[in-house]
Length: 178
Length: 431
Image (cartoon, rainbow over all chains, first blue to last red; front, top):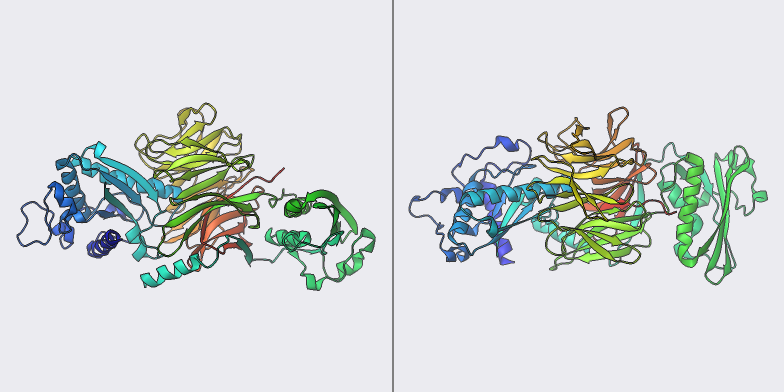
């Protein structure tokens, strides 16, 4: 439960900071520009400025460190889009490098959508979201054997409201370390 | 605000224990035909409150959207036999058709139900039948009578002596969501639990003979497709490939299932032969292809594809190397087709911005008409006679089933007293 709250809290923070989380449409227009300001993005680069709150270590134990950049494990998407955008690209890269550095680590990637649109199309869309994240992880050296993908479509919303506030929290892929 | 919404939803989830559908007609009685159903006389036994045959017929006729039954309090007489009917009086109050009948107990638990349908203007009998019934089949016999009356007066085969299935999701405070797969009569009675799971259940669809349901269940942690015999409760796991196993659709002859698989890297439509278990790939495209349904002749399927960038409906022949033809062009989101039994009409979900409605495409003319108001309507499914579309909707923020006549004029809501209700499927009419 605490985990869930943490994820939700980070989710809210991230969503609020990310200029690329939009209510609708122009999914492909919002390119990843690595803009500053968001928590994750600020700690993304190697050799970043001193005095940062989060650590970007890829030691095995980092996964249990609440102050690690790896503590953020939800990637949010635009409506009807499976493209990883903005600061989430950096976040996924961190997890990819961690998996690459820790061959015994494995994750389940869970794809989700908001409630809009049809259920089976949403299963397919959520699968593509998880697959986009998987490709990025593998690009960083993670192995396919370390990653299991499951798509839930709109069946398991993180937030139960029927408005953009909830929808933006539900269009997501979650990285679940096993 | 969010917390408030959440608790509100949870409260409504636990307000009742029995999942019963309540049906109310919400829109449109104009243009319906005036008809009178005289309460049936019960002989040799007392009327059962839960199997009031004439009341069930009255309710079916009203739900069809094609009739406006006279309220009981406005009845001017209670004829029991044909010779008791005084046609001029019924003509005077504007009634076109009249139904009389009765229920006779023949032995313990054995009944005989008879009815007659009269054309009031001509003063003649159009139909007259008698059915044997047991205590448990009285409701079904009443629905069958409704189907006979509708067929006689509209030419359409009735759709009431059938079963619907749907998925409900219930959440009690502090507990995980419980998913239920249920079947019920078309008026919500006689509900039957087919499957209970803590993981999602999706996309139930009846076999053409109405004996089996195919559906997607996540009960093993991943999506798998099952076929469930509703009489024996025996289940067969028919598809468990890596990745998506979804969107099952029976071929019209019941020998094959169209399904969506992502085992080759991307959601595509495949056809699974149920006896040989042979799998044939139907679509091959880097985009999403899913939600296939068969045309009634079994020669082609209609499916949703995002190959143009946004979801649209396409038709593809089952023959090898067929090229899909695009069917929908208006709007950014057209998905989840259901095809009428005559193959002339497709209902589907049409989305624009944040509003999703059920729309109907007339294949002969290419005309598209939206028939529901949204904002989040989905899973449309034609009734067996094509006159109604059952779909999932939201009422006051709560998922409900609803039905609309294919012309969009008559709407009704099938409210569930307990939990969310979604993804309706309508079986064939019982033979």
